[in-house]
Image (cartoon, rainbow, N blue to C red):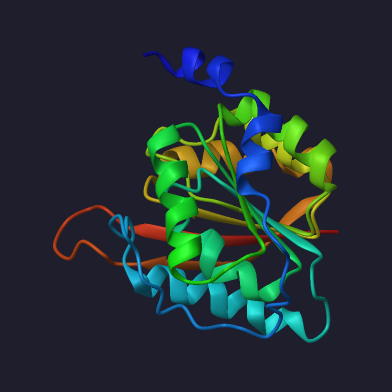
Length: 209
């Protein structure tokens, strides 16, 4: 089945109905030692750095919702759910979304919502349903997010965007798309997950000026 067919076969409304659960306040929860039914796709050190960076701002500015694009099995979404009223994950691979919902249940996290679909088409629908995010986290594949996704994110107007990248070339290309919308780099942190190779994981935080 193609990615396009997956998007067509699973309506946003049905996904929301399956994901809906009684909301529970999780603000202040910053524990990232989560159980995962399906593997952790990034080193926990990267997740810890992303969560710590956002938590350091939480006292002054607690976002109502955090949007995690290319969320996979909920690696960042679930860890960030404690910093907002809602944490929302978007991922094109439906099997990953099913696993993300299972991981949310396994960790008793009830304010996380997951949607399968191509981010280029699904993001506007998700934002219309839930409202604009205060923070967006994205962790795309090596090919990057692409200009259309980056522009859709910027138009939603989050106060902070956190981009986790394993490819500096596509990272630079994607970040350029945010400049016309008033976003500027606030912090950059490279993490050497692959010693003695040229690969590097990079976390970039951008604020809207």
